[in-house]
Image (cartoon, rainbow, N blue to C red; front, side, top):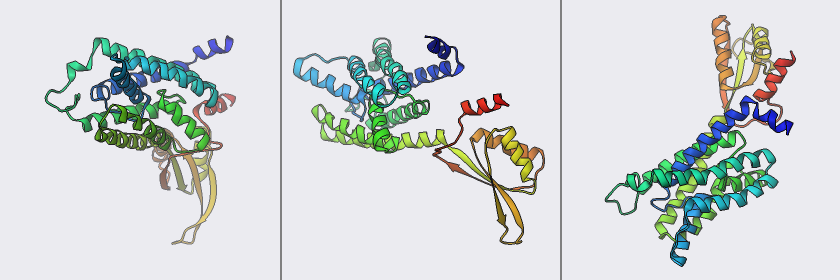
Length: 313
């Protein structure tokens, strides 16, 4: 109980709670306004829920509410998430998955998509064209997925399956989304014509690519290489002010044959901006190159560990 109360008092908890809530609001709008009207089945649990709703309508004459089906499927998958992925991911995904259905229910009740349907199109569509709906859905969902993956959470449903594939088969998260989604897409043959299924498969593939793109953007670090006679001054700034590590190499200039020291460090984007401001403010003469790094493993320190090291000083 003390641990739980301690977590509730942290700023990190409330920030992540806000991020998860906003992410799921975006997801709910994307599903309800861009998938439900056209019955476009992208490889998501929401898409599978639309299929189940359509099948129940055909077989029993009663269409189960999509929001209710999503809630039931997510509840089952949450058990898998808790045991197969980890407690933190499972607990966070319990929250995100369980609020998706109620959020969609609010949209169904107070802001029904029928108010916004474009008239005159062969397929019911908010944007008036199924491809525009597809693009809007993929962009909104992929952005929400990438942000939630960043804080070790997910939108639930397919993301849980993708995270399991990612953890145990070591696929990229975008590839995992595409593989799991393609399987779900094929269930759309039960309610949709062939061309709609193909559009769904294309959308699932694009979703995987865009998730990887957004994820890489959020995880990007800067590898900075600096050659300067004042390398020790720069080194002290990186270690003492930015609280990051660096590596020193002895190099020889190919043009002058002069020996120098090259400093290399891995920084976040904000830290790189601070370093450049320091160099410019102090008029330090230096040759600097910087490149993006999308994946970092091993001893990279996150902000929590950096703060701990600063406090210890």
